[in-house]
Image (cartoon, rainbow, N blue to C red):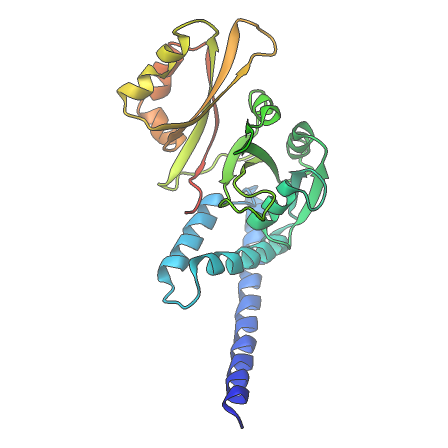
Length: 277
């Protein structure tokens, strides 16, 4: 038998063993789904996902590349999620839209996707329990922040539970766009988190500088600034900032108490793992 034939036989043997192990893993995923449903735990756990992918990449000795490992396990986890429950992900736009493609890159092809005509409709589907999570665009490198998303974040009770930030690619329509995943749960800390906060401040000179001063004093790293006018008060402005750390860390440092002294209100929009490099 040729060397090629022998190698193919070895691959067939390995594929049989891989299939057995995948089915064994799937059985465990079903048992986890039962426990989650019984305890009303969230189906999607970004902290668990991040830790698993990071661990797998770190343990790999090659020749598979890190991005290949993540892609393979994305589909394995997608199949597991689908076995745990009938997972539904609401996405802005029709099938094949940039946001739909981004959602697939995060949740895989085994879960169910439902289209929405607007950011408002995405959030409504999640709030009404018609979808487990919603995926909406947050920032376009060519046009900046998506105003409709910021407007909804200002009023929704949902929480940002993950961010998706693909690498720029001239051939991919959604490349470089930041998307967020919104859900009904608040994430546990992972040790590698970031938090988005909305500050409601007076629209007058010096108000923003005063509101941000506590961040400077406590040496908090801020990024991704955006602002929107208040729809109900022409004398107010909503200011969105992203800072390192989880809500638990921020609360324990008393930062929010200090920030609130110079704002009309402060709203936590979500704490979530930093995107994988």
